[in-house]
Length: 436
Image 1: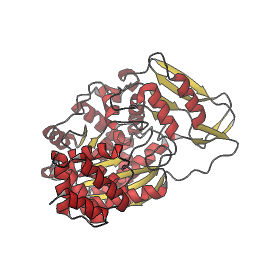
Image 2: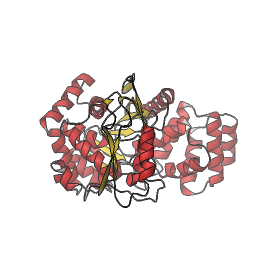
Image 3: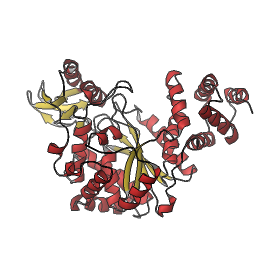
Image 4: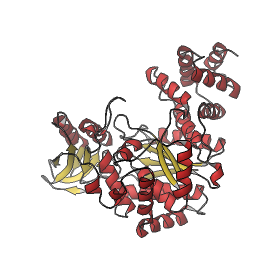
């Protein structure tokens, strides 16, 4: 078998076999296949596409290119949740303990943030002492003991995906649905979960900017998961404005704790209940989403979800006191500056992308992978789209450390991000579609 023949076959719009795809992925991982040949095949895939079977084969081959976590001996269906990323998306911090408190074991392998979207691992590392690097045995033992673990992806998780993504990034081959879906799902399959719930976001603050593309991606990932023997479902959710009121690592941890204490913002709670209901159904502890949602609401109101969060933080070496006193136990930014409304009316739109970029400028995110994160930096919104506001009323506050060299640009971003109109907007539903 030769890479030349595989590239030619795909260039001529042929369908690659599982054996041909495995040959490519194994060679890519080992270095036997040079980057220029992988790049050529990626371009042929972008031009001619992949069939459903090819996409599944590619995902499986990438998952098997590294360490495959096996949690089957725990005797229960492990459920994983994945979001395609957004601004203020702290759902994992809520969902892992919430679903676990309702009887569904949750194992979540997460990543770091880059650009305007935040990373779950960065948020957890803002908790003093929290350990995100868990080996397979530690992961297994923690899930067995308390039913929940959130850890960083190891270097051995789907290494072929890391190699291919670096090539896609520099060869204009990122925005292909099959390649995006296989990249995401290969890591999910390798993490050992028996069921996967996907949160596919669309809007200004999401990777997918429109509903049609989000639906294509969601359908493709659900097909891949089911074809690979994992129960998989997806929700398509809006990301035109940030989720919740906070954007920034410590700020989002605090809001997550409030949500687990049944005092969180309505939009974050709505998304978590919808995703959590899917997790309970796929995990086999509820027969339908209505029953599952009622169970999750009881976990929030009884305090059991918040208690499970404390257990998870303590098991991973963090300061569990943050659950009771987040204002005192979490690192705060030294400086805060308020942004005031320039006019009276209704908040017509909040541009999630610009809010995310503002938080990044203040230190809450990375412009390049080598950048360090300021855990206390970020943005707190006082109002969301549809709310009435008066001229001069506080609209948001900026949290930052240091001299605030980017403060003026951050302030300008906030002014452009919020549109005020004399008429209220017609808000789209937060949860647009369910794909099973």
